[in-house]
Amino acid sequence: NGKAARRQLSGVGFREGELVDVEALRYGHLNDIRTSQISKWERVDSYKVLILGEYSPAVTIKMLRLLEAATPEILGKVSYTIKPHPNNLMINASDYPLLNLGVVLEPLSEILQDFHVVCSGSQTSAAVEAYLAGLPLIVLLDESELNLCPLRGHPGVQFVSTPEEIAEALRTPPQDRIEGRDRDDFFFLDPK
Picture 1: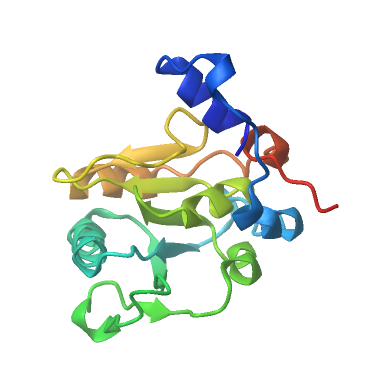
Picture 2: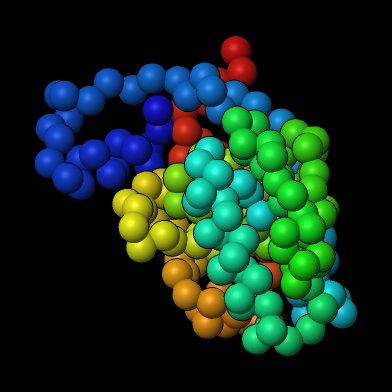
């Protein structure tokens, strides 16, 4: 469904004749996604982190516990908001008091511009939307799961698995938003 998938499949031995290009219909809405307009990290006193919930409640809980464990090591003021997965809406923000967690249910394409950085698990496709909007992405890996994130090897994506790595990723802001990430390089999208 895109050049990135084609490169990955070719890289693991699929022959060109075995691959057929198809439009990424599920991702057609990405044609309308806005690039983040939030200012550079170094110009703000606090920054906003969007957490993308996973399909699995257990994985989402692990992510939130990892972030909570990292919180005491993060310098500066951080606000956390979670966008639950549509199939896992039961997030009790009070279970994570160190995060002072907010919950947002609006479509991702409408809220991304309000955040500085996105944290996700390795299995949610919503991470691709954040990436294509130009936001830095921190992928929280679960040592008991495969890393299924399609953004391995892409600039602006960090993979972490411990509270210390999370704290370091959140303490070290990226230089700037990555503008102009090419949707066409990632997916075959044609609004016609």
